[in-house]
Amino acid sequence: MKGFSRRRWLATSSLAGLSLPTVLQLQSQAAPNAKRAKRCIILYCWGGISHHESFDPKPQAHAEVRGPFTTIATATTGVHIGEHLPLLAKQTEKLAIIRSMHHDDSAHGRGMFWNLTGHRPPRSGNIPPDRSDWPSLPAVVSKFRSAPKGVPTAVRLPYPMVDNGTLQAGEYGGWLGAKYDPIVIRTPAGAPYGGVSRTLGAEVLDFSKNIPYDRLRNRNQLLRQLEVPISRDDDFHSFSHFRELASDILLSSGVKDAYALEREDPRVRERYGDHIGGQSMLLARRLTEAGVPVVQVCCAAGDLNGGSGDMWDTHSDNFNRLKKRLLPVFDQGASALLTDLEQRGTLDDTLVVMLTDFGRTPKINGSSGRDHYPNVYSIFMAGGGIQGGQVYGSSDGNGAYPRNNPCGPADAHATIFQALGISPRAEIHDTLGRPFPISEGRVLPLL
Image (cartoon, rainbow, N blue to C red; front, top):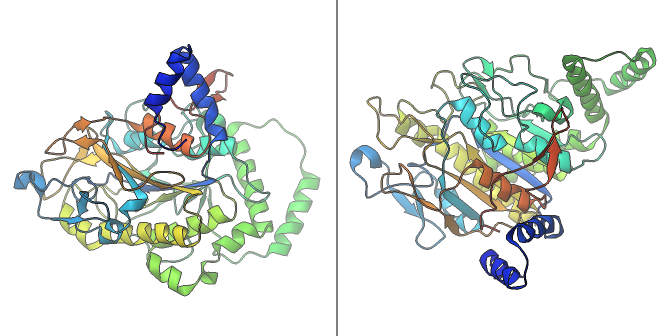
């Protein structure tokens, strides 16, 4: 019932003689029966977007914290965001901005692991993927959501995340197995982000190459006739799964049709922007309409390159990079996505989530940049039953620590699962058969 708060529901249940554990169990089991989003698009700002210049500006702070940018009013009374997000400022009635996110790791890969798995990184240092890792958010969603034949259950665009020449843990299926690794598909058009975007041997599908489909079909039939069962190690199983999935995709029409961005209304394509960021968001919308349950978009260059190029790792020249390239590209693509979904009547069915590694330091460094800062940062959610026009939590006057309603990646994941109609207490099993709840967080009051 709308307006019947969780607190009131708990109080009523307590009066009815139900214990708190029983109440929480019933509440979590009720999630799949509630109205749910059918699909999810994750916009991942690889490198750590500065909350100060985006969704949590501090205009009253000292200059060394405030920086040179001003703020702008939004469509939501009393809410201001950074001046270089004018298009998203008009969309805040769709957004639930969370300003009190935090965790405890200042390394990119481990910060990404926190945010894409909802769990603490399992080891120190620069962590490449391992089958002992907790599975990513898209991998877990794909465990509970099926897709039509020839359609992958989880997709990443337009390349894997890389730091200092290493693929990063957190994006993969982990101990769920290779079957749940979100497949990488290259975006076909749009000027690329500046900077290196290496795949480093990751399995990537590029449909822009001319592929003779009839020949592919004949080769697959011959290969199946010649293959004999063998004992598969994990690498071979991963390759085999990727090959079979790629073949299914290439031989079906849904994903190929979605990939053909040239078939989109030119006015819509133009609205997203002539860059790989906006075109990847457009492709994400088209892929989810083709039946892909969850699509993750890397909104940055794939390799952080030691802090140079079009990614959010702005240790130096923070303000020029944000003003001239990073914020305008993200603002255009993300606002176009929200407008597009609304106009197509699918925003209520599509959960859009912006995630990032962490925020940036309150104090500007000597290179006119901001450094890694996990103590507080901002994300947002929209669509999929999320009640827009709200800000959850706050940071202190310097954007240094949560002031009200602190929350973390596990809470964001619990909220995402709830919006998708998946109980946050649903269980998955590791390679030893041990059960784990998909989230240990609490559902935030955004729905």
